[in-house]
Amino acid sequence: MYRLKERLTFGSTSLYWERRYSRGGTSGPGSYGRQAGWKGQVVNHLVDELGITSAVELGCGDGNQLRYCDWPRYLGLDVSGAAVRRCMEAFGADDSKSFARYDPAAWWDAAGWFTADAAVSLEVIFHLVEDDVLERYLRTLFALGRRYVIVCSTDRDDVPAGAHERHRRWTPLVADLAPGWRELRRIDPPADVGLLAGFVVYGRADA
Image 1: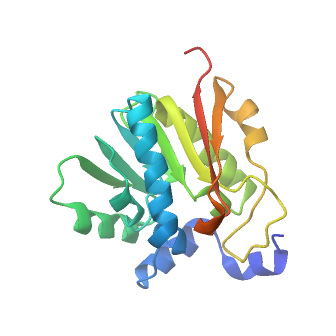
Image 2: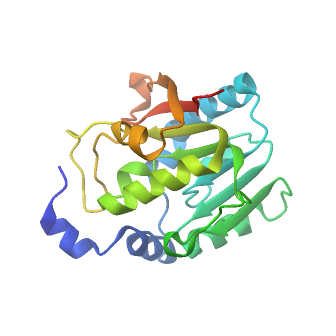
């Protein structure tokens, strides 16, 4: 469970990740090795099956997970400028990919310039320890998707967590925060991958 004592030394979600990436840290083990490989396989299957033509990822991190995903056109957003710069350096020669820093306090996209066929969140939600940050993130995530929203996260509140994690059930919030969407399917990880997070795929309710 999330502990208040750790919160007091943690600061905030955005501050934690900016410091982590600025100091050379990574997005964590889920973005590397077998776990990243399995997530990439799921993503690539969904791209083919659903005919996804573009994606915007809210929380792209250091970009290593992106190496496993074959998005036709891709926009990566992250609260950490250091992470975005790392992605720009890694994928600067790929004209199918763009990156930008996401500042939740200075974000307004009523015209839909940042939207894509699918909005994507890969192991981000359980890193959003503040309730208001989670709610704003979910509102933004579902506003970014034109046809689909693809999430990989835990969806339970009984997982032990450190200062930069908070596992809880987030799917019940979708009905209130994004009522125009419906859950299409869930995809759980194989036991040998060692990943607690599974996929939840949403589609437009009127589609």
